[in-house]
Amino acid sequence: SDKFGHIKLAPDDAILQTAIAFRNDSHTDKVNLGVGAYRTDEGKPLLFRAVKEAEKQILADPATNKEYLGIDGHLKFNKLAQELLLGESSSAVLEKRVASVQTISGTGSLRIGAEFLSMFFNPSCVLISRPTWGNHITIFERARIPVKYYPYWNPKTKGVDIEGMINALNDAPEKSIVLLHACAHNPTGVDPTPDQWERIADVMARKDLLPYFDSAYQGFATGSIERDAFAIRMFISRGFQCVISQSFAKNMGLYGERIGALHIVCRTSEIADKVLSQLKIVIRPMYSNPPMHGALIAAKVLEDPALKNIWLSELEQVSQRIIQMRRVLLEELVRIETPGDWTHITSQIGMFSFTGLSPAQCENMIKKWHCYMLTNGRISMAGINSRNYQHVARAIKDSLQ
Ligand code: PMP
Image 1 (cartoon, rainbow, N blue to C red):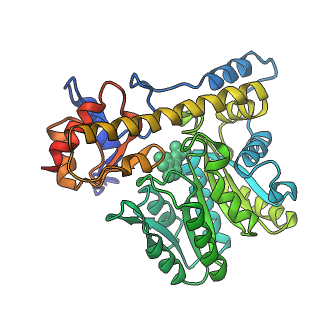
Image 2 (cartoon, rainbow, N blue to C red):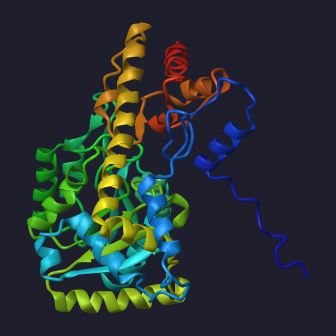
């Protein structure tokens, strides 16, 4: 009998579909504004110099082998990743009350984190920002956690709908998880201000909600590791227990190496030990243990002061190029007298900008101007460079008509 004939063709992922459409377009002025990875001003992928050098040292080291890592991964990496995120002087780190495991980048971390919470926290639901990175929703659904939403984007101000968000948190059921983007919110590019973060923490403390931070862009948003970790560190210093998914895809350009971590901040080191033991039980039947190469690279970069300095300055350059492209695009939009206020292009941060373009206007961007983007209006600033910003500005202006 036919075992698989009943299976229907699944729709393509919207982001990957955009990438394919871009690749198949032979137009010379085509622009990829859908790309989720950094591009240089020449439009090329970037291999960080610090990463290349770390890799060279790893390969030259006679002690390097390809043995299995433990279920929780590379222990030195876990510790260094924890310190980068929380700060070396964090009370949670010093008191050893953070359970950390290496994960398959940020996505794998979210999946393990969601599964762990489903098994051990008995959540009533997870509250997710509307809009968010699409995978968030599916990841929590797969972990059998009901998904609810809090408003986040205010289309009028093109900023955070802080009142809507606070009200939704205030109405959250008991034992809710609240998923928060640590910095550089995807897809909107708008983050709460420090004062707004305090208000979010106030209501979450009062309601005893569990924060779950997704940290996919530390250092990539502002160029500063510390500033981009502000929200997480503030919550922990206020005494919150929390879950954090960390990715090194963007900030080390290690997309394909799939290197990340999951951290669970507990009240005591005894609790953290028990949490860690159960995280291993979650991981074991999924993939036994994580891959080694990315962990060796990230650990080397974080451990070696010279390499770390090179990395930090490269990270600064990367974030500065994106900030500069925001400025250049805004100036061009103003220069060609594009109708409306476009200052959100420079006030938004990180890789993405939520333009506010409607689906029909996005279609015009793609079909007429060969500017590939998501139809929710999200553009990747990494796709903009000194050769194409004028074309993009003209495309935006034309699409408004
Ligand atoms: N969270 C957010 C908000 C992201 O934008 C991404 C990458 N697009 C991720 C998590 C996970 O990425 P990765 O699995 O490549 O680390």
